[in-house]
Length: 92
Image (tube, rainbow, N blue to C red; front, top):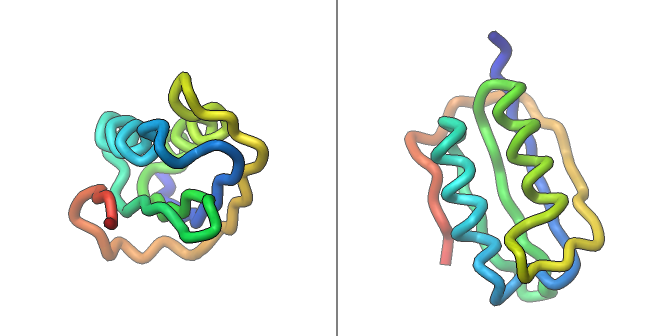
């Protein structure tokens, strides 16, 4: 199985709607490592590492988010897998 890494930026109404916690829950359920955080410009930024199929499931989650989110765009930057994370964390 192929492990991949992706850096995502999610824009829209994605802060204050449990987007980070939902992302963490989904990541842990898919054995994905990395992190998620809010940006000052209102977007959410995240890095995901894991099996390709699992990462794609998490990217799909990011296109919808939790029930109160209104996702307008998800920018994805594909990067080389580094295996640098032990868990998935919310950065505050």
